[in-house]
Image 1 (spheres, rainbow, N blue to C red):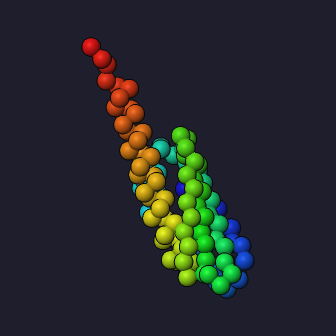
Image 2 (spheres, rainbow, N blue to C red):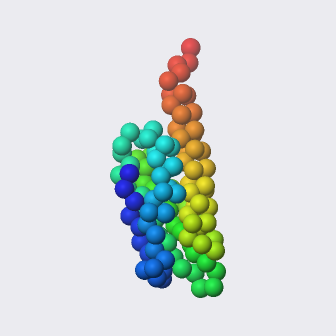
Image 3 (cartoon, rainbow, N blue to C red):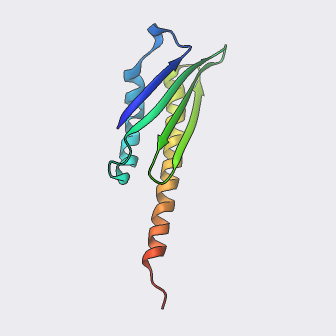
Length: 109
């Protein structure tokens, strides 16, 4: 999965794309169930005035688009918070899809 990272208001010396990719690489395990239909994840890192950083994550799945936000004093903390929210939403969505498939497969007598 590719990640498109946009930096807004962040100095070049503070940009660390490898850190963001490393922290978000764990999401690939949850996305594997969509069989390669997910091509790109959008990441926007913003510097907030006197409040640290904000990270917006965008993921377009074949069945639904998921968006989360994370914030923190450092880029790393903001990415971790956004990833945790994305994991919860992905797990909930995958579980919901499994329930729908089970219901469709059972025939009434």
